[in-house]
Image 1 (cartoon, protein in one colour):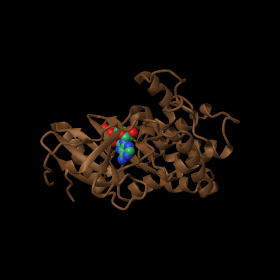
Image 2: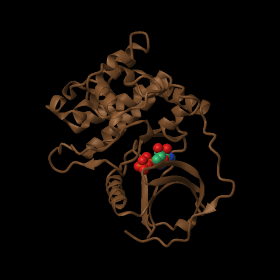
Image 3: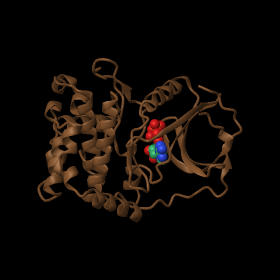
Image 4: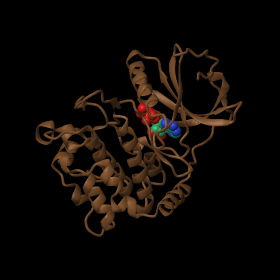
Length: 311
Ligand code: ADP
């Protein structure tokens, strides 16, 4: 159903993305809070927004994908109304309080739910292609959901190689960066497993794990680190539990054919062995210790009185 922008008050800015801003908004009549993603009307961005919405419409019923409510197009902006993930992204959580890493037990809850999200997407033939901490969102119920389908792609009929250069290079798997050496058994779902493993490892380390802390990720350094480096070296014995190290190893195998699948990883002892309530509680505790201090706008502003255009 359509919505009127004038029915909402903006509460605060949740984040910025490519060409757009995400606001936390209050629907005055129902007192419900949503996230509202506003992208300025621009031909190329419009195309991207439309693609994102087409994909989001296919994710209805996914418990671990951020829920999409509706899209309104105005002459100046495209506005998507989304489920509000009130604890923000795992990336923002990490940056708060000086990149304090997530405890392993909390990460078991993050990894399990992100894997469930990937499983839901894959069962609908959707490839996300941009899994990274900034796109794993958390709410105060300790739920983790996958967001941002700006570069996702629906695989039609056969498995399309999805070889276009999109997504965040830092989280790209070796076969996506170097299809000649690593692309023999290319499978787009395996690329998502790599990105997820790297994202979870980053949350464990507190910084992008394949480069030394503080080194800005230039293109050549990334290529070398991803395609030639050894992920094993990042987590030497004693740096983490054996289960966690084994889990990361199963995600970050260079040859995509040797990487575990999402279904296999859901049965991995790191994810399945941890008591679910306990790991969710650990995540809840971590969220509480790192609660958001970002200011709420003093005077909630009305969003413009722009009439919605049906799509
Ligand atoms: P882009 O696609 O332009 O990169 P995103 O959709 O990733 O934009 O949103 C940018 C940031 O806004 C995210 O990293 C996150 O911090 C915040 N954000 C996005 N969607 C939501 C949401 N549904 N709930 C809460 N915060 C969100």
